[in-house]
View 1 (cartoon, rainbow, N blue to C red):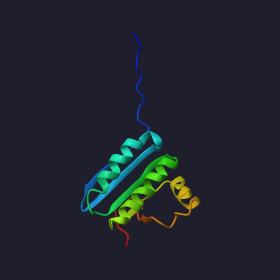
View 2: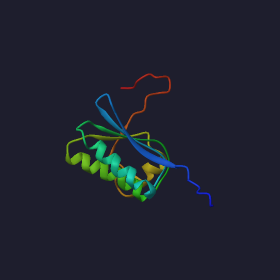
View 3: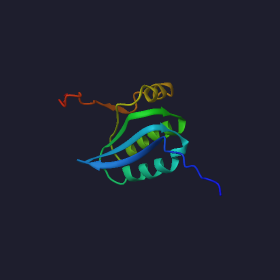
Length: 120
């Protein structure tokens, strides 16, 4: 009898709606292995007309399929009139967006200071 090892998830994508906004949270390694999560998350995010925030704060690595997910979500949301912002993306995400000429396409969301004060 052989043991089956189950690899621990190294990244993920999920969706949470709250306060009239839909948050698509990405974390860890965002790559082609998350294709099913990306498809399900996109469907959930586009099921409402709420503004969408892509929270990339905890992304450590992103490949072309992860970047394609962000761009496809942005384009699909734009077609339905939904605003999309990118929250606190890892430098690698910004560099890839710049490299393909999409650095200015998605608005960046200001992140509140650690002390809880809000900025205007």
